[in-house]
Amino acid sequence: MHDVRSVRAPSMLRLATASLAGTAIEFYDFFVYGTAAALVLGPLFFPAFSPLAGTLAAFATFGVGFVARPLGSVLFGHIGDRRGRRPVLVGSLLLTGAATVAVGCVPTYGSIGVAAPVLLLVLRFVQGLGLGGEWGGAVLLTAEHAPAERRALWSSFPQVGPALGFLLANGVVLALSATLSDAQFAQWGWRVPFWVAGVLATLGLWLRSSLTESPGFLEIDDHARVPLAEVVRDHWRLVLLTAGALSVGYAIFYAVTTWSLAYGTERLGVSRTVMLTCIMAAVVVKGALTPLAALLGDRYGRRPMCLAGCTAAVLWMFPTVALLATGEPLLMFTGFLGALLAFITMFGVIAAYLPELYEPRVRCTGAAVGYNLGGVLGGALTPIAATALAAHGGRVPWGVGAYLTGIALLSLGCFALLPETRPAPVVVAKAVMD
Image 1 (cartoon, one colour):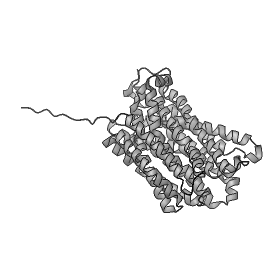
Image 2 (cartoon, rainbow, N blue to C red; image 1 turned 90 degrees about the vertical axis):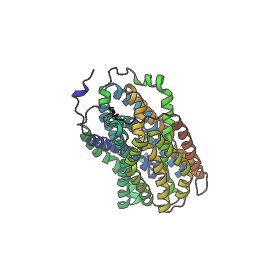
Image 3 (tube, helix red, strand yellow; image 1 turned 135 degrees about the horizontal axis):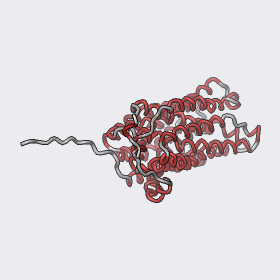
Image 4 (tube, one colour; image 1 turned 45 degrees about the vertical axis):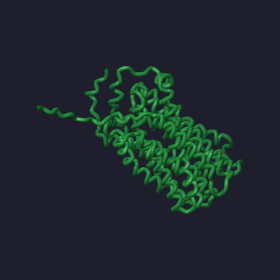
């Protein structure tokens, strides 16, 4: 048995900040590909296709990253449950960072032919493997160090990471778009954000080098021999419910940040700079409010927050696409913001909720697999399905609204079947002497 008392826990602020920084860097790697897929990868890597087909093909390579994420969660989940949460953070960051830099070096179709999209596909798959391990390691290391009464708050720090990663990725693209001509951006400018990933990965490894292993892992006496086998045998229903519950969050986020970017620039004729600015402004607000949603989760429970956010998503998906179709920056921002507020009401507490649903010996595998399967259901298919649905409608893509509403209803049903996990408040009893 490990002697937990000998482990000196780092301050929660330092630990949470390091987890946030690493998660932001890994999601930067993942999001920069999505932005490039929406803007330039179609004509560069699928030039024989029509513009619509090229965008669909680029989004298909985008989706491969989501398919790889559950496999990454199995691989790194096994390491996390057998060897500890800390090794997961280092391995996943190295893998994702190396793959992202390599994407920026892939020659286009005009240089090496069909090998170009094949290489793109392989590297996107490797990106997904790394990110599939990142979330589980970062969240568990934070959640298992945090005091029970503030677990949602501290665990929300890694949940801010995706917003920061998205802002950083799109900020770099926006800066390049503002300083380069369209021809320069298509020729070499799109590669720069991928090369920046190498610098960021080095920074992330330095930040994580001093982290200690989580008490939750060190307290486990009997580690699972094959964590995935135990999850499939004993927790399969829980995995399916969590995957279905989380799918709406992914669908909302990637409809706003990836599909709408392509739809606005290609279909509505809105400039790339305006679209990126509207989306980024909404993501800033979403990221800033994440700790507030987590605090409410510590106060009122995880499940009520998830049900409230899901209900808001059901009601807001049709207004979102209607506001997008106006092409007016303020109205588009309003639509994006409402959707992302519904999203964060749920996902602000997920980092505490999922680990609490699974027993410690298989927690890294179970929570990560459920989380990343939700990404396949909601994230991988949404840009492809939304692009196809929007192509057959009028100016307002009502089919996309119906698709997103359907996913929200599915998730609402799954959340309704999950239990509450918030630790009971500690009540100090006072004896009354006669």
